[in-house]
Image (cartoon, rainbow, N blue to C red; front, side, top):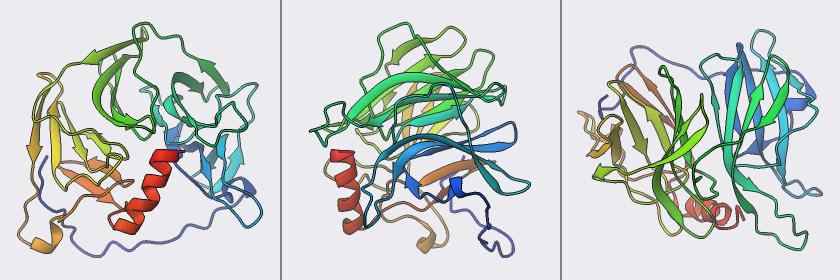
Length: 288
């Protein structure tokens, strides 16, 4: 993986895809999206406020069929508590989704502050059913706006980093074994990233995980990226370089997206301005 700017040959125009179905009409953020069985499964998040309806945490699951671009709601006998800023990962078989953590409405109707979850749920798309997972070991603190990537090896594991509980950000690293569910906190060394939330992590080549961006409770993280060698558990800092100085990030960002394609990390969107940072802090503090 390289810190160089991605260059594409030829134009790559964006286009808006007209979807059908009223289930996709409700705006939301802090949701997750996984591809299961060739269909995009969008779960939970926080709805946008309108002039007469306040924003709210959701626990709905909606599915987009790519061939017809049609949204459908999934009806299940039970479902996890409403939440946003959680993580969701498709498991290697391509029909199951693992959900961890997030912020959820307080059971106290008089409290506007959310609670921060550390529960684990499994969704099976073949039978359209949720299952609450019983996990051995000491679990991470409840958190939201963390990252979670799946190591799809012989014995798959979920790698969870950072997040926030509304009071402080974290920079701890956790492994969740999937086959025999068990939590394990991992001690790392090297240039360990500072505590942060609303960052991204993505698997790179050669058994590495790349982290970029995010913020803590007070300020935005810088534009550096970090690589974690998953075998030695050592972090290194990577500073972006490029022939075109305008292509190199001059400051960090949060609430962006990141995917790894071949040797490149492709980062899109996010928040960088003080105004956007302030708006995001309101969500971080009062995801809350």
